[in-house]
Amino acid sequence: FGIETIYTFQFKDNELFTECTEKEFVFPKYHLITLFSIVISGVRGMLVAKTTNPAYKKLILPPLNPEEAIKVLVKKGIYQDSSAK
Image (cartoon, rainbow, N blue to C red; front, side, top):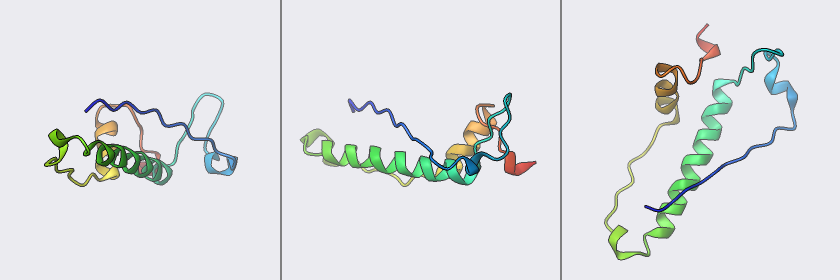
């Protein structure tokens, strides 16, 4: 589709990361779900903007569940769900 995105987030509230140590960064699952939702929405918006191209007019975008995406990351060993401990 010719879309490449980079999302950068800054956090002002360090209380979100109370479980972090110098050796381990724990990112709460519920915050990750929120960030995934933002990214998915942004990419969907870009894809909609590209539907001005007739080749993409009939493209159907299925709903995506951020929690399912996180399950894939856990399964691949990319993310460790600290709430599952």
